[in-house]
Length: 234
Image 1 (cartoon, rainbow, N blue to C red):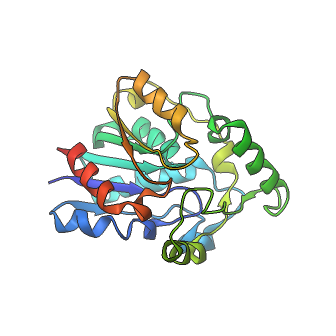
Image 2 (cartoon, rainbow, N blue to C red):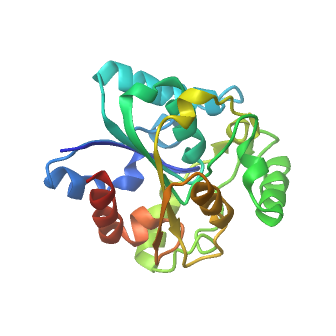
């Protein structure tokens, strides 16, 4: 059986895996779904000092405290940055990394630099305005490909502002990160913001899978995602 660590994207928390984690556990796998510092149930710890390194540290501390080895580390969206950072810090604890419609950074890049020009401009405008210069307000879920009203009603009240410093901080990566094998899953039924990241993954020689759903795959296509994660883990 496999140990999965499932990392959420911006504005979310560990709760967003609620349709995925129980299925993996029912199949006998061990699953961790941590919430990053400063969002969701840890929003009381939010401050301008929370950056990407904070979130990498969150996961490193989890790995060390639980004695996790041979794990499959899954990062959705923004959390692709965190996956890379954890791979650099704890490569020996991971057997595989999965970037789920997520950033695939190289040394010296920031998440905001990896977004296409349109979404990046929207983020900067939102931070400068309603984000008070240090927060990213939640994006429209419809833009992310969520169409079902029940999904919108479940997601919307749970989203919280995300610290801008996590997108602005550049990442430091070296040989350790590169040693951890990777897989990319692209969600193809929306504007495909992460298609360039899928191409990066292909260029690295990673397997690239496609899911016919919007960006929020863990909510809109949990069964298909679980089946794919099981296949990847095997």
